[in-house]
Image (cartoon, rainbow over all chains, first blue to last red; front, side, top):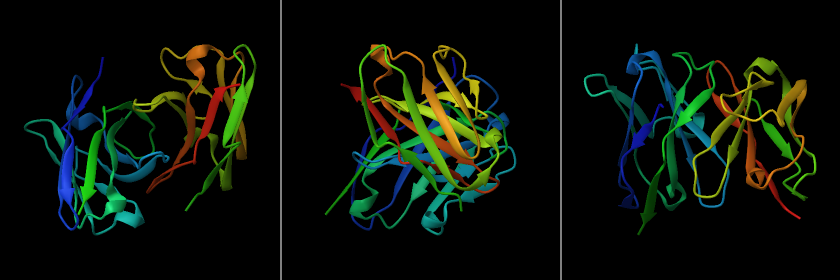
Length: 121
Length: 108
């Protein structure tokens, strides 16, 4: 059973940055792309960005361009999401999810447990 | 950019009833790139339907997806107690993913 294990909850100040990690178990890390999706309290799902660990290709939602950076560490099979200049609107659960292939044109089959990021003054 | 509109926002039904959830796209899209997820409180989303009508592994056959062009439907033939949840449609394009706003199916 594939699992994506994310880092723990974070509390940040307005203007700070947060870095969330995601470590998929099982299958070859570079065979599957990863997307990051967030969910504000009581709200729906919002796609943020995608990364292909095989070649480092990234795609970002326009809303987050310039404020989020996705990276991977193939030596530890871990994906990272770095979000900067936090505001209270960034308070949300952040999920990583695995695509069924390397391409963005594939659906998300497994999801991490979510990481709650709370931004306060 | 594609916008997905789900309706209704909330569907109140009883166990055993049929649920029909709609997802409308702002322009015609290929059903191959339409996906449905289920999310229960405190849990991550779970893949239900991919490529418009393919059931994910372990998903009961009471769940079915259909549609084409701008109109897509998730049908739950007979609601079981564990089916009361929020359902999201999603489209993936060459440079982004888009989610609908969700439909909550709650117990009448």
